[in-house]
Picture (cartoon, rainbow, N blue to C red):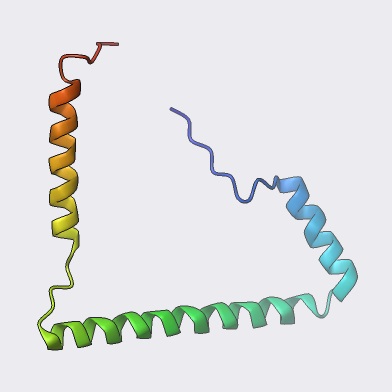
Length: 95
């Protein structure tokens, strides 16, 4: 099975054209500054979300709340898979 990743349904040529227009509008000297500023902003957002996640985790652990819900979710998913296999077992075809 071949999987293709689509990034907003934009091809390489369209991305190149957009970058060319950005270069024309802002100029070659401003583009690195803009990219640097965007990179810093993205890093600040990522750091802020990580801080929020860690604070929530710490407070949940302090209150004695089980934060590892993946076990419960995995158990429910496995249960549903077993039920589906029981229903579709005799119906499945061999390819």
